[in-house]
Length: 213
Ligand code: SF4
Image (cartoon, rainbow, N blue to C red; front, side, top):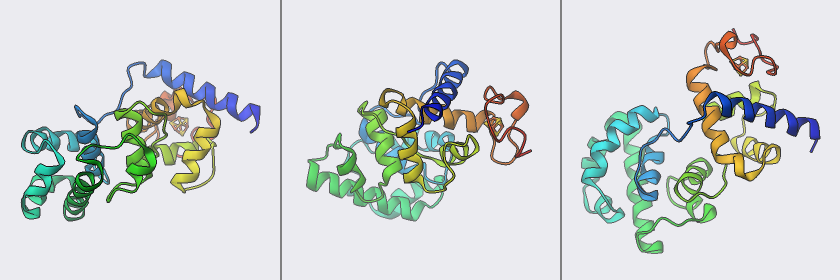
């Protein structure tokens, strides 16, 4: 690993930390199980919309068993506005069944075990271990994917390659927060359609400065 590339990534990280000192995960949850469900619902949906839905959802369903016990049609109705509701309802039910059968209803604090659950990929597993259990992980969402390329960390659309690249560039203690920093920057400044390069704290370093406008 080139020292210059690491120093560059660390500088980006420092600038973003200074810009968003209070950054945290946008999804609302009160335990790892709620975080797991919220993250499954967040696929192709904004975190703000998921928070509106889970506010009521988590009053109604508190455990994996409660999701298993209801008819799938009812769950579909409850999560309808997050989009792809049929697939998500199926994933949630299958995931909860496996949590019950393999882990006595507990969410495992282990990336590999989480990743094997139905409806859970690398991103969801990273979000849950990182934020639910404090285990270093890099969650690659659409913002992290796009902005990692704009910043020149990598030239790839492959989420797994991006995850490993960020892990090479930054120390583990920074991984979870860095995902949030990039996602926050993507929501506030570095928009996909028209990034606000003039207002960007990374403008002096970013190789894509004004190239997307
Ligand atoms: S300079 Fe522009 S393209 Fe680069 S990170 Fe900032 S907003 Fe995005």
